[in-house]
Image 1 (tube, one colour):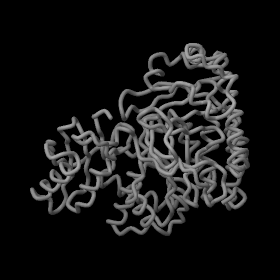
Image 2 (image 1 turned 60 degrees about the horizontal axis):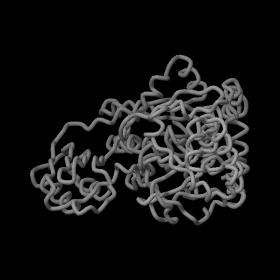
Image 3 (image 1 turned 60 degrees about the vertical axis):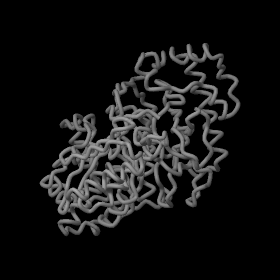
Image 4 (image 1 turned 45 degrees about the horizontal axis):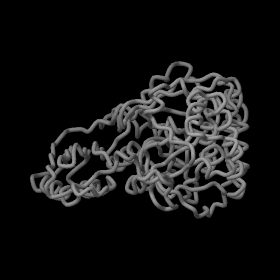
Length: 456
């Protein structure tokens, strides 16, 4: 779906064509011009997009060597000369940027010629929070990349939107000015923290009343709302919802099916993070397109060498719009695979074929075999007498399982859980099953079904 195919109401046309551009211009962002450029460049052949990346990479490396203390010392100590970069593969000569390196001296990554910077941080769901800084160029990219992706699905700025989110950062930002802006652009925030029965009743009622064109939020939260609406026999599949955008968590197949069937709309997966930026978005043809005009994605194996297309590895990101505070070969801790095949939609943007979650979403069997958390999720997900669960691998020999029991839960179900976990991790593993009334989300509002504290 090209930008010209987007049909919008008069209100949306005014918002997207006049008021939002004014809003961005006042903030000093180039989001509008950038989105227009992205909608042109997405149709370029893959080799031309790669050439664009190389040009921007050479510029970023040169500026970083000259103006950024961290990279000036790093390049000097490793004998790396940005002027010798001739092709994208030369990027592999730059050492990885890790969270530990940023934490050790956050201001060392600030460019001497940086414009205004905003302090940012991650929620620390997989460990210690990360503090870093974001410039206007990076912010403009993030806005433009998300904006382009929503327009793929016929949704634009000013269309009614329901956002189910739980990050304390966004929730603290709901002051009067932010609330006024959200009302103006017809975006409503539902907090993903308290998902009680009463809260879910209210969420479903607000979605029915709002009749949004787009849903946006955590897949776990949207799937929970969908299941609640279905259990209450409240029809929400004819509200005119065009798409449900999900992000910030791994999207499981059963969540996609639930959201699509209940809300009567397709699900568009999005991949990114507060530190690494908006990395990839799903198009209507099913391709998970990398925002390659400003982002280079590598996947690396346990030996720190590149993995072949289709082979999962840790996702490493170089964000080309971070000259004020560079993220070059940043290890995200996420696991995914690249796809060498083109998408049937015709866009030249490269693809991710899978995003399998964080490295802490993988578990380790007693014999050292690394398994995706799905191996344990399947043990519990198919038990109808369980309405919720969380699995925490504490050590190689101890795994804790919290379950919210439903009707029919008994000792036989508990024994099934223990046997299933041991079958995958090892017969000698102690499996501690505890019954709880509710499993709260993390501080960010996200749900993590599997957490491993075992290094691998």
